[in-house]
Amino acid sequence: GESVGLHLPTLSVQEGDNSIINCAYSNSASDYFIWYKQESGKGPQFIIDIRSNMDKRQGQRVTVLLNKTVKHLSLQIAATQPGDSAVYFCAEKQGGSEKLVFGKGTKLTVNP
Amino acid sequence: KAGVTQTPRYLIKTRGQQVTLSCSPISGHRSVSWYQQTPGQGLQFLFEYFSETQRNKGNFPGRFSGRQFSNSRSEMNVSTLELGDSALYLCASSLNSLVTSEAFFGQGTRLTVV
Image 1 (cartoon, chains in turn yellow, green):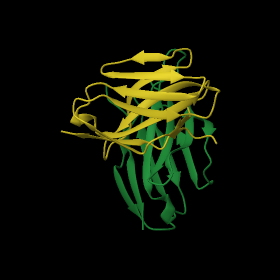
Image 2 (image 1 turned 120 degrees about the vertical axis):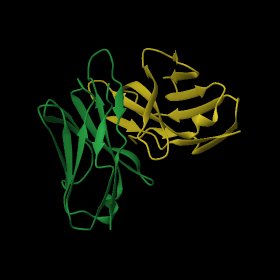
Image 3 (image 1 turned 180 degrees about the vertical axis):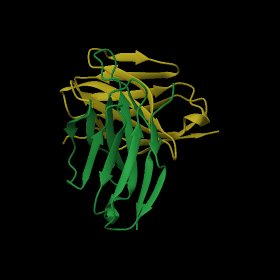
């Protein structure tokens, strides 16, 4: 279908561990991908993005990997902190459109 | 720089009523998109406005409509409310340039239909 999917609905990690959140997308025409973090009662917050002409992009404690061959996207969070606990969404966008197609989300819980 | 502002934050309406939600984008952003978020369906695209024109529309009934003003502020309207319209309605704004495509979201309006 059109939606971007996620492999796991929940992920629980220990504080200080690295977290990996995965996402599978279905539209090979998508050329821009974004990870959002949504905390309870708030709107989605931009974390990091990547264009289809790249396979890796790093931010502060976060890395996004894009594998276009298998249409897979992942978000790696280094040294996960309790403040990282939230629901994480991947989203895709197709060239020329501002429409975002979101995955279902993965709830990350960081245990102290 | 102020973020995306949505008003009101919370609304309670009864079935059959109509509602208007407002969104003020980040200064300089000309594209405004609306999304509906529910536990069952997740985040779903409603429509997008750019320069006062609807450029893209999701798969929602005609009861859902929107508009954009010359200052890029946007409103969405839902008429003849149904219980299933209870959701968090999110507005996102973007610069819509060739260089960057980041979309920034507001806090949302929580609509409850009773």
